[in-house]
Amino acid sequence: MLWPHAKSVLKAIVSPLLDATGVYDRRIEEVSVREDRWTILMYHRVVLDDRADPFRLGMCVRRDRFEAQIRYLKSRFNLIGVGEAVRRLTQGRPLPSRAVSVTFDDGYLDNLEVALPVLESHQVPWTLFVPTGGLATGEPLWWDRVIHAFACTSRSWIDAQAIGLPRLRRRLSLAPWYRRRSVEQVLEALWSLPMAEIESAVLRLERALAPRVRLMPLAHRLRPADVRELHRRGVEIGAHTVKHPNLCLTDRDQLRDEMLDSRRELEALCGSPVEGFAYPGGRMNQAVKEAAHEAGFSYALATISAVNHLPCDAYELCRIGMPDAELPDFKRALSATMVRGDGTLHSIA
Ligand SMILES: [Zn+2]
Image 1 (cartoon, rainbow, N blue to C red):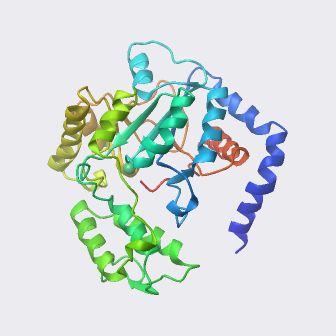
Image 2: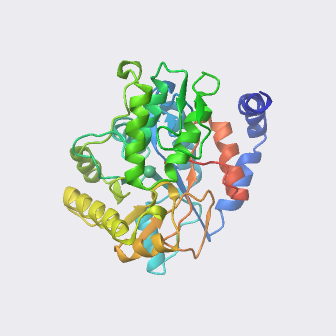
């Protein structure tokens, strides 16, 4: 296939050559130096090797690449916590020029074990958004169960209609060259379902694929004591619902419960107010925004891949997903998104 090949050539050859000319740095500087700009970045996992993300779905950044990205951000920008930035804006105080905030979603154990030492060594403030459902029991997140089932099955195809995804082609191939496409299709189809249907569809999918656990461990989540420890070490903790549903498909009572229950559990765990919220998968509409305001959050983050132009809507803050990329290609992707706000960096969760 030509396109993936062209992309790998771009990453390996063209990006370093262009980076050496300083073009990416100049583009980033032009956008970020303006005082009415605020860039919020989004990570999920920082991992020690590539096996944690078998389908390259954009959830993981390798540790060495992450450290290079953080070092670059620290050298170029003024890093500020999201909560602190919102407080300043609410009080009519300006943000520093080149204001950038770092966020993580979903509460993986590697945030504590791998990302925290890097962020602490560079004194980077950051915010972590944690779904509370299954936090105490370590129950895996629903999309990780899907990824695990696809990665660890010996089946050659799956019947999408039998697992409750009638909009997909009935027979999805699990051939090595097609499996990633099938995972993406299933995840996208699951996002279009209410939470109760996601749960039953994931169960049916696991039964159909019979994954062998030994082939790849499920991604570990933070435990309650870990969340408390991160808070104690200065990390801002934000809410991310209980079950991580598509909030656009959630009725009014469930919306309120997802927001308030997760907020109260995190406040009890950390012993301090939780001010921020991140919409699961970035999925939101006007009713969801209003619910976040009514639930008492000071701000809420979406995943619209763009720089925030101040003054901006505190309940629809844009965030740019960070790629698992070497520094030149990281700068190419960041500069392209900052300049165009084109949504090319997208995340599934
Ligand atoms: Zn999420």
